[in-house]
Image (cartoon, rainbow, N blue to C red; front, side):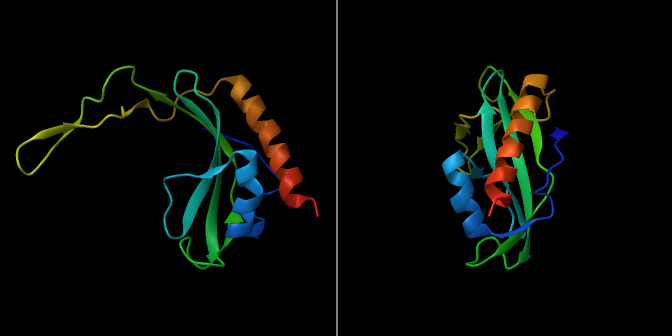
Length: 136
């Protein structure tokens, strides 16, 4: 994980408006959100796993599942998830004694080393975020 300093850190936005501005640029609300914090993810690449620019945010007024929620932006960062090349070896046993296989592999390394090219791309994406969010 490589943090990228930004002028958007600490800025406050209505979550709905933030999504409206950033979804057309390719950002999605990350799956690991809670009622008071979450993240916007931009998938940079899928080389040897997944590389993302992640923009964390926390609710300062309301909860993330409520209309009109206001959020504060944290420090953006670039991260890399390196996945296994084969099927997941962790299976779930159902109550009936049957076994089901999870089709998605667990990360081999959820915080893999981030190549410099992805850090550079992340910095360019943060500049784009600053222009998008801070230009009147």
